[in-house]
Image (tube, rainbow, N blue to C red; front, side, top):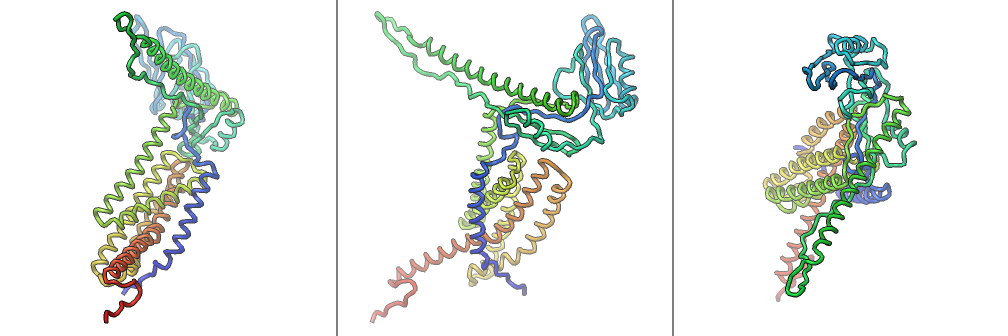
Length: 465
């Protein structure tokens, strides 16, 4: 017969530890100034950049217009115009393996196209690319074709942040994308967003009767006022976007001033309004509330209210523990962090439901055994399953933590903390709450029984002689 582990002996110490962790997490949240908000929860200009030197520049002074496109196969140029047949030329990297060969072929086949090399002619052409912003239309202004150096030195987030913050007063949030050798970053210039545009309200116009004629007095003034408010709102939004745009251009200038002209490639520039960030925050709140409600309903239907409240308590406990860890480590709080928290809640709920199912089964098999014994028996019987599931899942998560960087590594780190917290919560916190609930229910039943028999609980019944 398997030895029953007395988990119940740790209920009180675990409750004290959890209370300290929760109070410490709440205190830490306010002392550290809340979350280290990532690029998903702040208004401003989002700019995606990648450090890649300029391989060569293109200019056009030929007939018609010329547009350039770059993909994984090569460089494609389309020449068109009024009164001329459209011509398309593709210069594949397989046919022209170096930048010297590909630029020479382009100039020979397209009269009016000029290319100025910035890198050695023997540089491999397969790593050529272009930024995603700006017009692909060639003209007198040099158009940059960049080169992704496969052996480039790493550039850290701290280095980029130091360079930008040394030259800007605005709040800047930086997130690494991919591997450090990719030198790929998401940069947000945090700024004030335009306030929501007021919409004209439907109000009853004031009327005044003059010699029997009803004239709508003040209606025109009301419409003009509404239009002025709308115009003001639009102007504020445009001003905010323009300011953010200036901030994005300023970042590009700062980075090029430090790392070299033409060394930075802009992949994306977007303006994110604070209303979008607020909407995202509201959606997350609704999602978490819906999760708690659905777990409560599911556990109530499948088990009973006692189990359902315990499951919700466990979810809240795990959420607070992970949030406290995020605040403590100053990990960026972004959509990836939210995904990690929701994954943890699901994992913890699954483990809790397994334990609940075994408790229900054992209550049927051992109806005379005390509830605390049922809990210890159920936790002991599910211990092997809990350990095996957690360890195998942890191995996969540890692989993510070891072999990835940036947001994925933060995701894995939060998952590891949450998985440990989930096992601890199910084993000690949820079951401790269920024990407390059961003891209260038993005490209430005894009190009602004693009251109905006319004696005080805990004292012998008086003789009626």
